[in-house]
Length: 437
Image (cartoon, rainbow, N blue to C red; front, side, top):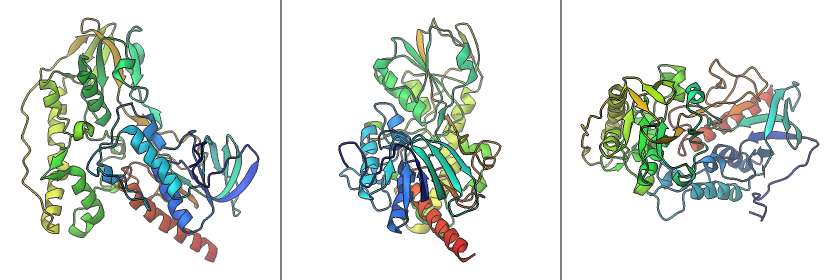
């Protein structure tokens, strides 16, 4: 990589117009995965990245962020994990550096600082797609959109009604406890980010109130192995044994594509994030926010229900398939040695922010999609691109890295490579069909 931070083969443009066979939008893991397949096949392409630095969306995480998946899952096509701690959990800068190094290893033709403002389809010629960027326009035969699914921080409307004295921010803007004003912190949301930030704040000596939503929990280890060991096995060979990862077609509702990720942590060597234990150890748990009146917050009487959901999530969704996979594959596994936690926190219906000393509210409430820049009839009622395993109804337009693109593993470190290989094969088939037609 040269001193400017450009990957080997990266080009910079200052305007004008050009035509390129394939444009990949996004130079995170998904975009670079597609670039590796295109490069291997000798196919002309460029990878456009809106950021000025390689590393993908991992750069947007807080200072002490760590992977929730073990380091060995950061194995990309043509670039397997080569570190000395496969079962550890990378900090933010390590995964950012690994993504940047991947771009160099595969000689990806990345152009940094090049956001795409508009994507449209103008003609039926050899390069029908027209992209408007900050560095000029591009006509392309094919476009792969690989910008992930975490675009715009989602902040509930009640945020506007909180007292002006309160510091309000989304987890996207959170960096560390020292950057917050003194006082207690209300963390809203109990997915992966919420529980980890709550733990970090408590360890820093803050009083923490955690508003618990409808999020499941999974154990860090199950039957002697990290839980992702079993999920990876099901991703790779589950279909062979009749227990593949859940697919998008099996979701009870399309809205579940946006459900929070089960809480878990890669901090301190990796550990469970059991909400009941967090309550027992001093974090105040409350239900969902129902309303605000001045300094007073009202909470729904759903804490017990949400805790029960979190408790049962793994056993109802994953334990049976994992046990079946272990049995049918003959994998070595120990007993289920999890110990149940029965602590029952008090149900709090109302809280005075000033009396509780709360100075900050952090929304760990996820992200919304933003594909408004795609000027094509491609989005469903929820704003999600319509596609089948990455192939859109518009010939030549593809997607990679979306949550639930194919199944529950699609947006994970260990799922994008598999999806990318499948998508590249289908893109190649489409190209041959077009050439023969």
